[in-house]
Amino acid sequence: MANAFENAVREFIAENFLFRADAEVTNSQSLLETGVIDSTGVLELIAFLEQTYGITVADEEIVPENLDSIDNMTRYLASKLPAAA
Image (tube, rainbow, N blue to C red; front, side, top):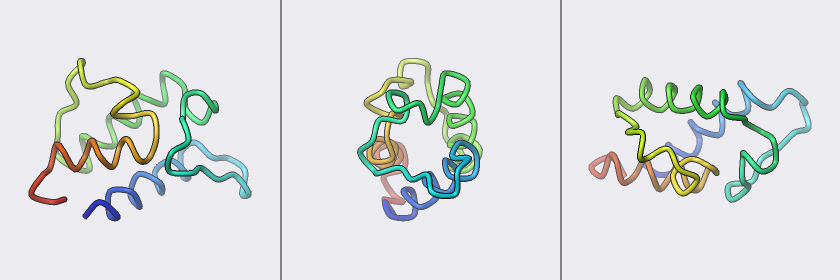
């Protein structure tokens, strides 16, 4: 299921934040440090995760370790949805 998480997150980022056809994001790349998303983008990303996976992202979970890269989000989703991972 981790690949499904990765694919869904990657597709959301590509559709909502990458505006050049040749733009690409690696799984370990910091989305904030590279300017792919900003603070508003983090909120959009959280809304996507909550709506898509039926989870609640608590305020204390809004940290780079959970949301700053595709790898981090995949691990975070796997921890929130262990039966699906």
